[in-house]
Image (tube, rainbow, N blue to C red; front, side, top):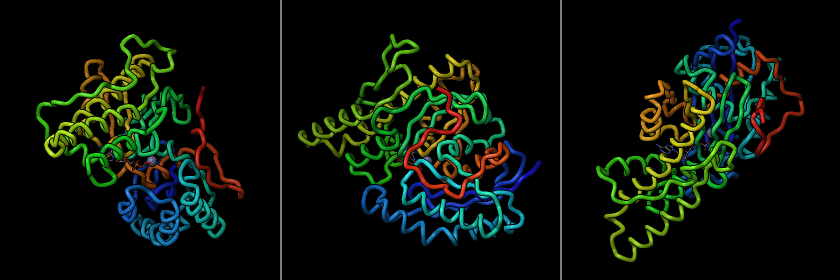
Length: 350
Ligand code: KG4
Ligand code: ZN
């Protein structure tokens, strides 16, 4: 049965709405509107209060333009999917309140969607083969998770970061190097300008003799790497060579971070014998990361799927796609639906 779902995403600093339609796990993108809040650049990070206020002013025109672009009316919709967790509570509340109001006004059911489950569905909108079973690496500004996905709705969390998220590490290192926020793409560009790396940092959390079952087999940590970069920046400053050293430091940092992610993804693929890897989250835009994972796994015949930047970073299309699956599975929001700063993905097996 083909259904049509409006998705709404307001968990961080993007106000987004999208319409998808199709069979439950074969979503087709009809429209996607993303209103990015540039104002946070001025503060070097997302200011929650400002984010909530901008969602308030942006949500109505964003939803209207997604509906217009898709050429659908309220009557054409089967459901309204909305992100309810995790994220900034004030920001999430704008989306959940608006979705509930829309649901009451139109009589359409509201389907609550977990933001990280949304990231798992993003790639499916562009690659029909990015479907379970697969190993997932979700790397964003707020999260870093390695998951085994045996089926839609059946997720096993293998490892996650113990401190900074991968994107957070990129952003903090970018700040140390004097690059703008958010810094991931600037680090990537700077690192790409280096032909032969001269500065190396140890890959964090990679022990050659780590065994399945050890705490650090899948877990990640980036704060030590960030400190190593800070020390390298200070040394370069002292010797008056910082300007010349910036690209080499950026490259050394990116190589170490990617090296760790590649190692952990390979362990997950090997243990669960998966033939597909699906990437998601803003850091998945990093072409060096995509390439390194694909290169390492090519010999195993593993396909690596990464969404294009528009769908890798926060967007409502992935929320609508996950919402379509949840709608088909019977998930409906209660009138008491509210926002949660942190909550495990539904369907997480331990
Ligand atoms: O998924 P996302 O848009 O928002 C969150 O949910 O956090 O991810 C944003 C993060 C930022 O930390 C940004 O620096 C990082 O993704 N990012 C990148 C690249 N593009 C965005 N990191 C590394 N390389 C990139 N090309
Ligand atoms: Zn996200």
